Structure formats: C-alpha cells, structure tokens
Amino acid sequence: MTMKYIFTLGEQRVAGFEPVYLYCHIPFDNILLEQLEKYGFPALNCAWSRLDNYNKYLEKQKWVRQKFSLVPLDVEFHLWLGKEPDPNKET
Image (cartoon, rainbow, N blue to C red; front, side, top):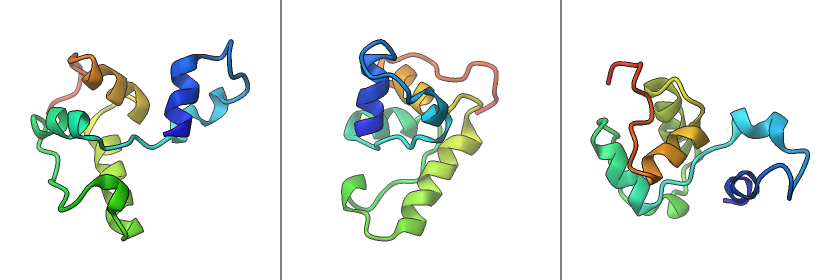
C-alpha cells in the first residue's frame, strides 16, 4: 500500500521511486476484487492482507501481470475508476 500511495501522490511530492513502479504489486481490496471478477480472477478464500501463503499471494499478482499488458498499478488505477484497463488485449 505504501508504494501505491507514493505513486498516487506523484513524483513532485515523493521523488525517486519511479524506477520501481513496474515491480509494484497491487492490493486486492474489495473494490478491485469486484472489478477483477469480470476478467475471471480466481477468488480468494480470505482477505488478501490475511493470505499467509506467499506462493498463493504471488500467484494472484502474476495472474494480473499475465492477464493485462499494463503494469499492475496502472491496471488497479483504471479499475478503481471503473475504466477498461486494457482495451487492446483479449480477455
């Protein structure tokens, strides 16, 4: 969540993080999970913040990277706004 907030604030307020943007994971909150359902996202059996198996967590993060051509935080920002995150890739 910290990285998401850094990029939400922008480079002018919190400088120097741009090189790591491509590597950031997305938080699977309820709003995002609801939006991802439309794309066939595999359901979680608990809150994402309570996942205690890193491999399962990483599997979900990789799913997003494989499904969309945008970097994960761009996908999240689009979905949060109710926009199509990846109009050029088949779903």
